[in-house]
Length: 153
Image (cartoon, rainbow, N blue to C red; front, side, top):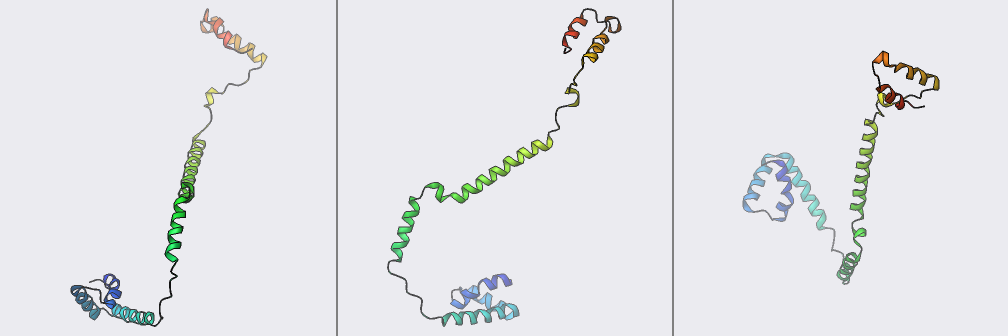
């Protein structure tokens, strides 16, 4: 038998509530284990101290009526008052999950791609761009007209 099991049976042993087989196993362990024997002596002293406490205090005769009345009042409470701790926990968990999603999205966002950013073109630069679409340089022919319409003016 291990000490943990023996110590868990000590008060039942002192009360005489153990079966014959368990009592014999505990007594055998107590003969071999000095720590559990010391624990038994300590438990006996505690048990003797409890015997000298005196009579139990008297319980008021209307106590049971008060208990029933408190239970009936608790049943009349609205559901959110009965479960306010669970509701608070659920709200905190929901807020933490939402904060996690938002912060994850903000941390992973890198802004628009660099090639999608279009710089402002001044009027003089606009003329240079229009000249760059020369039909002879690129061999565009009639497509030149369509490309020049895409350039902002």
